Image 1 (tube, rainbow, N blue to C red):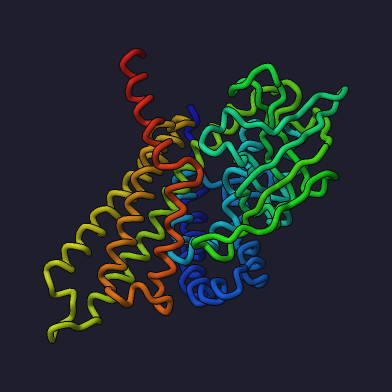
Image 2 (image 1 turned 60 degrees about the vertical axis):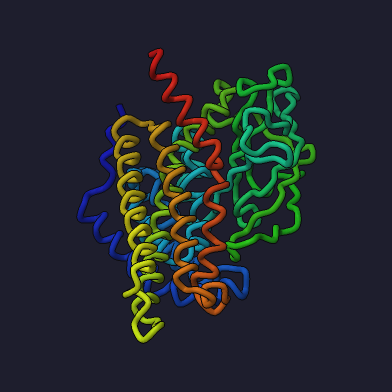
Length: 390
């Protein structure tokens, strides 16, 4: 039983207040610049490092802050009141890029990487998705063929967040060619400067301008067997590591969706109070009130479900079905809230000069990455059915 208590409440309260003010006073005014330049300003990156945001999930003994997932979710929600693009900068290091190492790495591996990840000296990235393999992660094709005590890796990874910024990758590759499923995959720690790595051109996306995604092409990349997360003893156990990482990461994404939803509810409410039609603020019209009321209800439900999943994870060390429920509901709810907010704005909501137009585009991706809504439904249903036979 995990029972992760996180950090002292006074320390946490101070951090949460800092992040809240940082998001509102520093990040909100920078949103339009990020959208225009398709990049996060270097000075903001430096400030995020100074706040310790890259190390919130990394244990204190390795230089991080050591938040539990309940605390992390609250910090992430506050951060995501501003554009979720800013969160993407730290997201792969805080979550899927580093947590496999935290959970299953050897002590030597942890000492080598975690202190530098915690300070933001290097950024971690998670290389799982491939051109023909997205949600079907158990059937990745990137191969890692043994050559003595080394592995030679070939393949292409797609849509890899922060690949251009990464100092290291958590890479999933097939080390057992005779096992086409989950049991033939290993997780590697791959330094970004390893010979044989090439990056594709940056992806052009519907939203989230300022995030960096691209292909990672691996051409005879050579790694020692000691680069397997957990060492050679964890050969062919990488899928298990990935699933544990994604379980925790889904609670994180639920917090992202909740923070963004709060922002959109506030934007829509303020517009409804200010915009006048038929001689009165549109917020006095009952149909507009219904849109606001539905959005507020879903927001509160999203926050409660995220908190429940996080508490279970901290208590038990896992929350497979509950994390999937939280990820499914919060991201779908955020999409509905975004749609209602645009509707409340009317024609103005379709214009780029209003924040809701950008927020609407940005939020759409949350229903896709770290497991689509449909994958969450499968996870939830399978766990429900499995509980009948246990």
